[in-house]
Length: 295
Image (tube, rainbow, N blue to C red):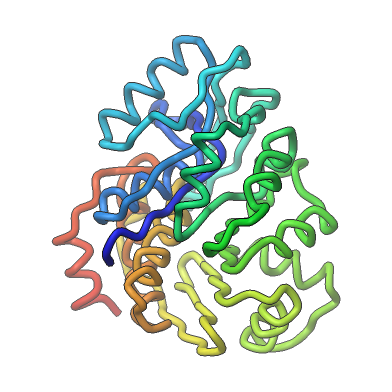
């Protein structure tokens, strides 16, 4: 893999779940999982100068991730209240005007981004000033841009998602978001045709579709591969999509095939659903068993 570097940009927050409070935020989750996989990964974000902010910085350091690019500002640290239904599916109440809504661009951040091979962010930062920071950092950027759309009401629209997808090289979308997107575009076709349309329309190298208990599909440079689920006892699904994305990025960095990529990404997502919280310590022995014996 050499010295390839991934920068994840966006929200660091706390997920308040029924069973406790856990460190979260999609970009942070992806960065933590990549770091656990041995990738040179960093997170650019912001927390508040409050108790939750101090605890977040401490927790990030404890998990082995550098905090030098996490700013501290006067807004409250991000918090999301999460409810889990009987099937383990979460719903989110994402607090507004929090620290990660106001991530600034510094010379150090510009340098880190320009020297990275992959830059990953979601659509949530575009609800406030942080979206402008992302656009500024993309000026002159030569690496791959990875976008994970997050359809979280009321922080998205068709026009916003269109704008963001035009920034991307690699897209990750889940089945619910995919269905809504196809309705917007009046597309009624096979999954492969729809994924191909999206790739062509937005000039995307890779489109990743996570489908929960139905597995996942990846269209990579015109090659479509799918994999069914790995059967695990689900505790909650918070962070599963982020683990899936981290696994896919890890495989793409190693130039793996579309099929190898979708299998590894699915295995990481399955492991996270079998644990509480978004970023449990990865048990690679268990993940290897999924890959070897899973159906």
